[in-house]
Structure formats: C-alpha cells, structure tokens
Length: 494
Image (cartoon, rainbow, N blue to C red; front, side, top):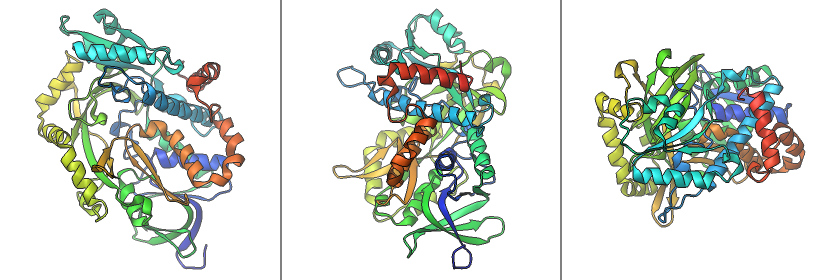
C-alpha cells in the first residue's frame, strides 16, 4: 500500500482480460515472476469480447488462405511479403503456446487449437489467374512450401466437399490449400492463461471497470477502478499500464493524455455470422475456405466458410456480414463513438469519411441486407445449404484505427496498431486483424519498447520460450523444420 488511503501499488496493470492482456501478463510472469501484476475486466469472465470464439473466426491468421495479405499490383504481380511477416508472427505464437503446455500453464492443446486445412477459393477468370499467381509467389518460400493449387473440380471437391456439391461445373473455380492450418479458440486460450495468472499470484478482478488513467506527480500511472457491483472505487499506482481493452482501449488512451494518442480516432464495424451446429453437416468438411472481398468491403469482411471447434463441438461458421454500430464494444453503449470525438481527431475522421464512400455504401448495403440475401451469399460458397440449419449470430465489435495523415488529413487503418508513450510506461492496442493470432509477436514488440533496459537479461529466457526468437524461420530451413515439427507434436497438430 502507498501512503494514500484507497491507493494500491502494482508493477504491471493490465486493462481488459482478452488474449492480448493475458499474453502480456503470462510473459511478464515467465520473465519476472516477482513483479506484481493486476488485471481488471469489466465483464464477469475472461475472453468474452473479441477473444470469444463466436466473436471471431479463430482462423489462426497465418496468411495461408487470407487473400488480403497477398495484394495484387497493377501489373498483375503478387507480393508475398506481408504474408511472410504474418506467418512468421503466428509461428511465434505456436512456439509460445507449446512452451506453456510443457510448463503446465496451458492444458490439453485440443481444448484451444485444432488442425484445419486452410483453403483459398475463387470464381471466374480474373480471380483464378490471380490465385495462380499468388500460389506461384508463395510456393518458393519455406513457410509456404506445402501449398497446393488446383482448378480441377474433382480435386477441390475432395478438399472442400460442401463448396463443390451442386455447383455448376461450367464455372471456372480455382483453389489453393495448405493442410497445416489451424482453428484457434482464443476465448478458451485466454481463460486458461488468466486462470494461471491468478494461480501464480496475479490479482485478476472481474466486474471491475477502469474509469481513468492519469499520470501521477511521482511519474507513475494512477489507474482508477470501479467495482461495478458495489460501486467501490480504488486507485492503483502502477509502474506500467497496458490497455488491452479491445474497442474500449481508445477512450482510456485518450484519458491518459499522452501525445502519441492525439489525433487517433476509431471507426466501429459490427458484424454477423451464420452458424450451423448440426454435426451431420459440420462433420462433412474440415477446412476454412476464404474467398475474395467485395468491392469497397473492408479486409475483415472477406467471406469465409469456417470449420470451428468451440464448446467441445465442431460447427460451421459463414460470414461475416458487416454492419455499423456506434458501439466500440459488443457490450458497450451507443455513445462510444460520439464520446471519442476530440478537437484533435475530428479532421482525420472527416477526411476518412470523405475518402471512403465505397466503404460507407458497402456498410449501408450490408445493414439493409435481408436474411434471404444472406442465404444467397452462403450458397455462393455452399450451393446446397439449407437455410433452416443456420442461425444468425452477432459477431464481435471491431474498431478500426483512424490516423492523421499529412496529405489526406486522415487514413483508415485495417490492421493492428500498438501505441506506446515515449518512455514506454503505458501502451494501448488498437485495431483488429490479424490481432489475436499474432499476440505473442505484438507483446514481444511491446516488451522491447517498454522495457529496453531488460533486453539482455531476458534474451535467453525468450529464446527458451520461443526457439526462433530473433530469427526468421523462412530464412532458416533447418530451424523451420525443427520448430514446425516440435510445435506440431506439442500442440497435437500432426
């Protein structure tokens, strides 16, 4: 306790009990087990917002099938650069999870990760040519050497039976497949990590909402916390604060007053999925099948038919159907967006609105889309789908980052944005995909930014946890083989 009544101290305060905070807390406990860690979550359970399995596609984003990570240039060429970066990042997560299983932090790997083929599926002449070029760009790289490609309907039918049954054989169809993909239940992963955090001495408080974060006169951060049940308020005097509150992170970043947060705004995008839990249907296909996004659609709205493993059952998920809500969290309020507007971010917001009319039109169209129109979209991927076997569910809320831009006034970012103060004492994570899949890589980056003086001290431990730490698997074929084989074995993926 400090000298002030109602004020407590902590080395690390984690705001939000999602996969990002859980990963950060777990890393801190592995590297510095004597540090005091406090985690605050406004809901009554960990991993209930964006980390929840029904609030995301759980693809284990490794760029194996997501076409937006392999953009096509005007000359028709396809770059593999972004796909390689994301795959490398996911490999770090696989290694970290494997280490945590060996140490007993995580339980049976089947409870949170399962092998599922990743398939890219496109229709028509232009898209087929693009997919072949993408395949040729990826295939020479070590991390993508197992990718397969086909335009034979019979072969594609073996890879993804539901997508080809009843389809017009006169339509040109192309597919690329990587058998070694995964489905990840990030909600379950998060809950196992937070349970172990508490078991190892961290204080994890559910039903507690952080209402303010301010710099104290002592240079540390004063984190104001409210018990949502009793109304009791507490202040935590923290050395380091990580705002991993999903869509709720922007408000707290603004409250902190750090210059790095000036000019940032949020653009919320909601979504819905169709879900099928009938085992007779879900059992027919073990694959995640990704297609091309519609013109004007955000990258996270790429249509996909996913095999999911959640709540001990195998299901199918199709979507997402994008929408718009002014909420920043699924459990937030409609005032989230208007309350985030500041004099320093209004210009970037207006600039983005002006420059993204296609996106606005797309979102309006999606919001007005009828159930029958949604069923028609499903049948593009699954021609024989019976709408009666599918229920419409609301997905998690995503808040895309709007940043200042010298030329355009503001730009809309569709990736993940890590914002840290100049001294590294506070950080916030904003944005969406690839997000959870690359949590390990993001938290390593955060540790480097926030604790630069510990780099040498932590190097050997980080290498123990993540054997490829500081190296690129794609450039080290032998190390890649060793790491992939080891993690396949530990995670029960082989």
